[in-house]
Length: 263
Length: 368
Image (tube, rainbow over all chains, first blue to last red):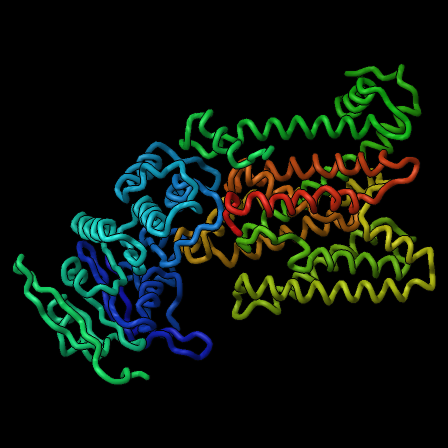
């Protein structure tokens, strides 16, 4: 399972969102997409998920252009967890997660035993099994986020793309989620995740795509991308390395004095 | 006392064994609504200026529907037979079709717009159908054939839909917000056109009176011709709606999520809008403007059944039919010998109920 962007760019209403981005998301790896707000992280994920079509270059799934694949075929192989977790209608949590099986069952078919099993597994893996009879619109933001992760797991797709999945999670659930992503990768899935927390990236990701103003600044192994000379100019901060008791290194960020570079 | 509909849903689900299947509350609700529909239909035929006994009604209907000879109705008077079969039965059937059409159109539109206030009138389709009918009246076409009115309503509805879609869409895509705004603006414009035409037509009191009456909605002197005119379109509209029930569920979660779960959002939206326009035009062409059905019925059903469209569409169709048949019965019998306009009755029940929902269910409905 591999997803590729080849010199991909997209323009909407004459405004370029990303330009000339080439990267790959592959099985058994967690690929983190990082960058400042508005740098194009979400756009990269949407192109990879086939939600948007690049206006330049290509987005590919296993060597085939996503634009030429039927929607349902993509849905079985690539799943996307959006940042906007709003659910306005009173679906039960189980209903929402069960929708992850829609790409697999016929239009009027009920879920089969295998489908129900996939839904149950997804519910417990994302730690929302105890919420299954609650209405999705009555949950907290963090609970909803985990429900949507469960829905993505229920698709059993080989690639899972997540847009800032930890943004509304508490510390424990965010760690749990990141651990889950690593676990999924070790089971052979291709995982791509937009993240803000560079320390989490260092700890959980295998490779990193660093976005800046719609361009891919760097792409490669974590150690090659999360480097002071790359991070500092892109985020406009000063990075301090602190070795903690466990022997691991933690990054601490300091604002540069004076006006921001982009101000 | 606060009757709590969504608690009813929870209780129903719990009694029926929890969340394993989506259909559980439906197993109770659909038969109940079907029974109510049957009762309303028979009552609608039995009650009126000339009363007909219930068993006579059932016998005449059975004799007409079942193969000849199965049921003997020789003993029933010709007059009763005519009242039941030629006057009231078609009227009740038209009422049922109108109710089902409007309720399902509303359900679908609320689904694709993710907005509980969406209804045929929101995207300008009702207004378009009404304008078409007004033109038919003023041009005098209605006098020459009963087919002109529905035809004009269809043309009006589709022109309105087409215009709204063209205004709202760019490069083959029409975002929901733009579509709603275009619909509201165009709807207002179309209504203004209708008002202008009506005000100009007041030189001829007869025509103007007819139009105003028609605009208020009503089912007086509907015949089997009207049934034949609207039934095929209602059937087609319902079919398209049911075909897309799963897509509508996905659309409720947002366009991106729907796409990522395999729905072709743009195609679904076009099909659903087409079906909604078809259903609305079919309803408007035989009943005039009957409001609130598309708003209130889906709401009530969603509270009891939840938002899953597979059951929601079916329940809305049945409950919509029941509601309009009951309202029509009231319209005929409340103030004899004259009739109250149907649109007045549906609004009189629908609007307060809707306000009640807004007040009480804000949180449970979840979308306010």
